[in-house]
Image (cartoon, rainbow, N blue to C red; front, side):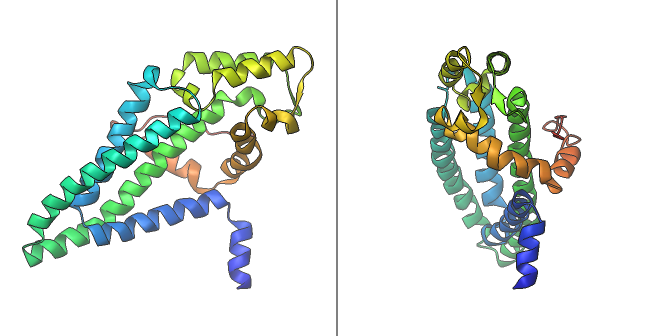
Length: 230
């Protein structure tokens, strides 16, 4: 028990989440086989990619935009999962092919989980870069809000997470006096949670920078992002 507590204390929560996600992906791959996750997970990731890149201008900002992505993933994943299950049902009629499907499902499940983690980390680090003017400062002034607003305007997909109206309210408040860091939550609780809880985990992570460094060399989907250091 003491050893478990020590691991929990020493290992960043983000790394534990990454390990758990890959292990769960491998186990899911064994249960579901090769075909179902290939069709369902791969197809859902493609849907979300198209939604938040090609369709970013049509997605409303803030939590509502994230909810749309969740709905698309839920519905699209369900439909694609049924299609994959139909294909797998045909394959599993042959005993040898069923065992092969399950065996191949383990590494595929782990790889798909790693790809999901990679995409999530790319989005997280990119988002962290957008918020760079807020990082490590005891207060948020007009210049910082203006810099974040300009960054969001140049990359509209992040308006889904950082609502421009929230930045407008922060800018109006900052004209009177710089906003103390502990008051950011009064404007946007999610933003304050990221700065106070999520970002420290990102900075402390051991696995995240390794996954991003390897992932940027993956053909077609990999690209470089600057990992935050402070």
